[in-house]
Length: 136
View 1 (cartoon, rainbow, N blue to C red):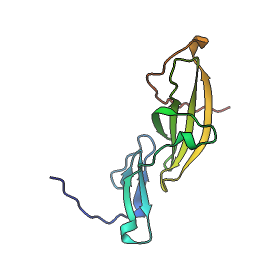
View 2 (view 1 turned 90 degrees about the vertical axis):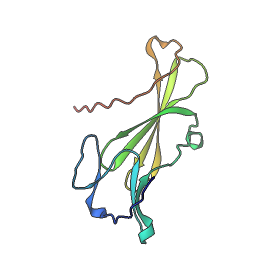
View 3 (view 1 turned 45 degrees about the vertical axis):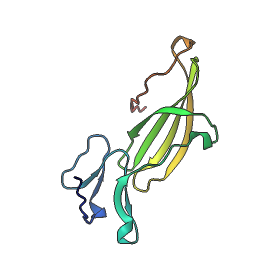
View 4 (view 1 turned 90 degrees about the horizontal axis):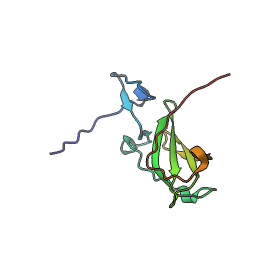
């Protein structure tokens, strides 16, 4: 049996988690959760963000699969998707969207084209994001 409990949310005490930033004294919002501080009581909630990524509606349309998210900061999440090519090819495009974790607003940032190792045909079977920060 699932029990629902109505609890008021102190929107000044939210912790928009970046990687490993848990705080036991706050409402912790992990990947894919947004908080809406609406005008009325029914509009104030924390919920999963169920937006659909619609790559075919972007300026350079191509189907994506294997979506991966990365929390860039406490308020910004990057969402990556690798091109869903129907055949094995030597190149793949990786699309990027930016998600505002406080409002749920999403924006298309573009894509890069990768040439795979040895420029021979490959089929993408797995996709993960590894972020490396560099400075000069």
